[in-house]
Length: 140
Image 1: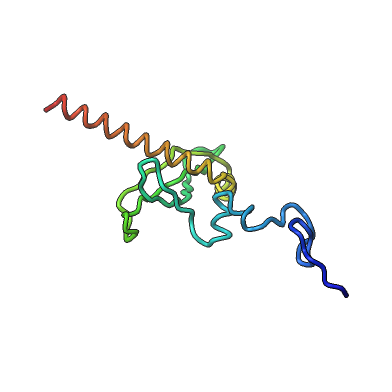
Image 2: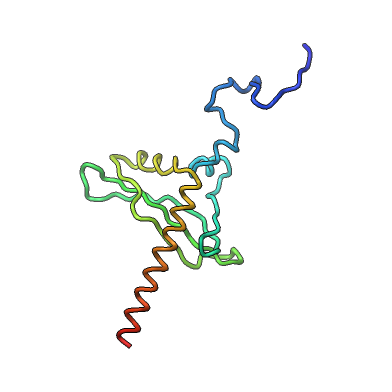
């Protein structure tokens, strides 16, 4: 059998050529895919230039039609990386009938959307802090 050069896009014996085979570069573009490929959560630099990672939180709620909700929590790491010093979180992103359903929907979020949600959460927290400071100043 003659060896041949494999070009990008050619199928190989371990690749049936189907689209969903994907390379790590393709699969790690979503929140769940990134974790599957790298075995760790993605890290981001937030709008405040601080380091964050992300975790998916799923909770049960008292809604019989959709008893589960999911949202993201972004732990903020010390600049040295030696500990978590704060966090921000999103509002509820989705609800559903099962834990797996809502987790799968959040896993499918593209990383650019996760980054946007992080920056929005940072902005909300900054606005809340500014409102709190204004209230204190009016009382003082």
